[in-house]
Length: 216
Image 1 (cartoon, rainbow, N blue to C red):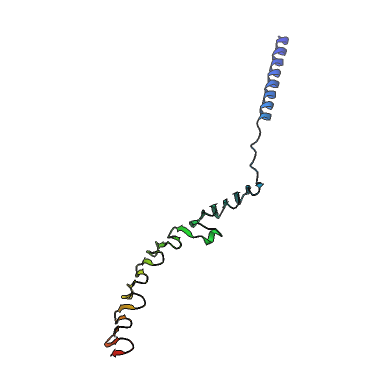
Image 2: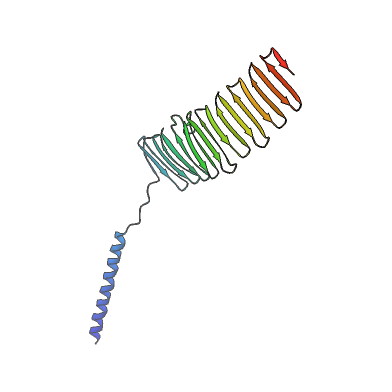
């Protein structure tokens, strides 16, 4: 019947209009997310800046600093400790009242090398490619080793060095008074000024109460 078709068509148009209105209201309620600000400053309490290449944050400058770029990442708690991370190494600095690069202590590590020191207490370093390492305590006691050399020092009591490639040994005791050295073609022993003995090939020299006596 014609009037029934008109009623059905009217209802369909009302439903379409209602759905469109609800859709518009929902779209108005949904807002795109806001991007964080690129720069905020409340000096000296807070400073923040960010772009596509760099991010910086400082709180109570210079007490707390954070910095991140494509090349490095830095986190610092001045003047106690700072951490720097690069593509090729990670580094920690300890106690740097003037500059991070003039710190009392450092721990640095790469894929091949490790270095750690805290002046004047100790110093340690190692190299995996060279198969070597060294350690010193209070600058008086030190030990180092590599495939070609070995050394041990207790200053001024003892100083021992051995070169494996040259097949030589040097020992100093009560430096500079006593010395012992040995090579494939020579030998020396002295305790100044009481005596001194040296031999090279077939030549022998003996000194006693230097410079008073000598035998050759």
